[in-house]
Amino acid sequence: MQIDNVVCAFCGCVCDDITVIVEDGRITQAKNACVLGKAWFQGHGHPSNLPVARVDGQPVSLDEGVDAAARLLAGARYPMIYGLSSTSCEAQRQAVALAEVLGGNIDCCTSVCHGPSGMALQGIGEPTCTLGEIKNRADLVIYWGSNPADSHPRHMTRYAVTVKGMFIPRGRKDRTVVLVDVRPTPSVRAADIFLQIRPGKDFEVLWALRALIRGQVIDAASLNGTGITLAQLTDLAERMKHCKFGVLFIGQGLTQSRGKHLNTSAAFLLVRDLNAITKFALMPMRGHGNVTGVDSVMAWQTGFPFGVNFSLGYPRFNPGEFTMVDVLSRGEADAALIVASDPVANLPRPIGQRLAEMPTVALDSHESETTRVARVAFTTATAGIHVEGTVYRMDGVPLHLRKVLPSPYPSDEEVLSRLLARVKELKSC
Ligand code: SF4
Image (cartoon, rainbow, N blue to C red; front, top):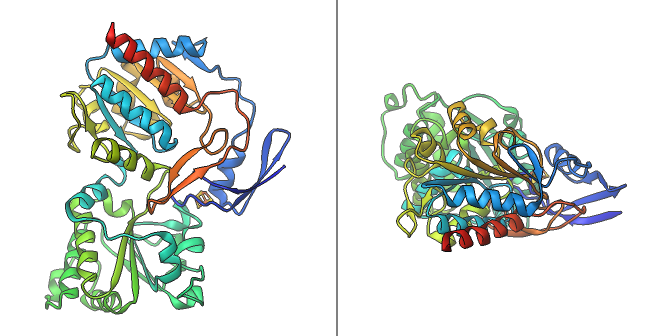
């Protein structure tokens, strides 16, 4: 069976032109998908022998699992909900509602990737656009601290570099592509200009660029130690001022290096300055398939995109206080609910140890380090493979996920909504 126009929810590109071939209940081909997308599609559909729910490693029914998980969370003083970047917006909504009823914390993977971008966005405003506008209009494309050739393999061909657009009829020939990074990466091959910046010097270079854009004179010596010369930076500033439509894509090389939200604030301010001269946009290179969605869902439900606390009965936001790594490092949380994420494998080792020691509930479509240590573990269907749902592309455009395979497992949304209902019952007793 052939299914067209399937959406790949693996990375923030959320490509919606995938053709999937299903044979004998398995996905055998994912045409148009990149190597990451192919692995994502073809890695699903294998028969699983995992039970729908386990308590202390023993198989139980879904109802029994929900009851055990609800008791564990409802009895906690300071529960933490985390993950959510690889599930649907419908499931994310249930998780936010659950955090509110529990009076606990909710945080998502944004806090360890583009949290500094969210903070800059709140302070400065986001000069943004859609990937469609970039495809059709951008004649200057800058990637700063990002390696899309490896992390988002179709980003350059589908949206930003080689693709032809309405006002960019010759595609690659009509664009100038600049890469700024601390080392050469596979993406350098696609760039006209590569600026190798010294690690931790992003803020200084962005601030000097702002000065040049504003016509101020800067001393060449002020760039000593940054890896960038005044001539290189002046050339980039002139290109930025004279392009018709520029875009600055920022990656974790900027958000997670020294300076963090000061780096992103400098980038946002630079693009704001540029809009007094020409048209310029900024876009974070979001990683997981629906990490943009969870920021949006949390923002529209609580006012804040990540690191939200409900312990006073209303939402409070404070990165560093209510974010996953910080809450667990201080040993404050006494229970955790992890949704579609594997923090035991991916976050610092002490966080994984803490999750293994405390009562943890985990929802995932496959066995992971986190489901292995969880007191209650649910096996769920994958959004975009086994169940429909909504995801947000990195530019904030929502897309509908299609179901391409049947699954014996419930969706994250179903498990979370049952959990919410049971927690409400327990809290009202
Ligand atoms: S670029 Fe990302 S969304 Fe597109 S096919 Fe590859 S993994 Fe999927």
